[in-house]
Image 1 (tube, rainbow, N blue to C red):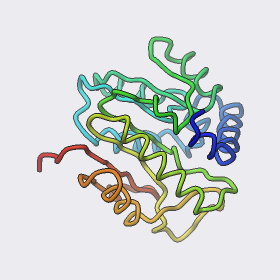
Image 2: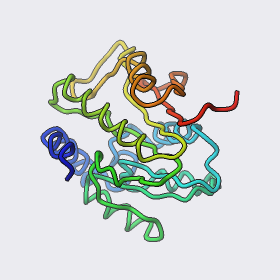
Image 3: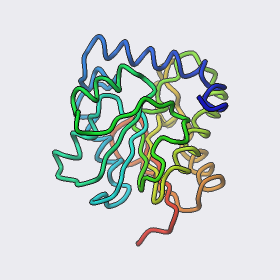
Length: 215
């Protein structure tokens, strides 16, 4: 682990254990990744993949789980050069079993090597589950994770987060303020940021670019 990863380990370990229980209970399915169903999982993938044209580009997924985004890309005929990493060894083993031809690595979320030299770095559900973590500590973890992901990309980062613009909250999920996270990205990462809060899930997606995008 890096020093930063080691500092956040008490927050991350329970979350990894939570996801591994879901995998053990439901197998390498959408529910095994702790999603409600396959339809909502695929909607998230579609929004993430809207970050930029992916044909021929390298794409790294942080928190890849069992590799369902790789399935999505192949089914859509999107010829991105995919790789994935996950903090759970069990998830990485499941992904390698499902897709032995793809590259999956066991890495911490904050490992700066994850996605290094990739065009696009994405994360789906990466920061949703906080379990008993304090919101302030989890926000610091989220901001550190976003910064590490952005440092590893050449073109853009895409990540989704739970929105606090909801009328019901579950205690083990982290609900962030979309405006505050947009401002964080603009202030700390890059000026070129898109906030997507236009799809029918209780979350939003941020695209952060190194260069201005065509109108």
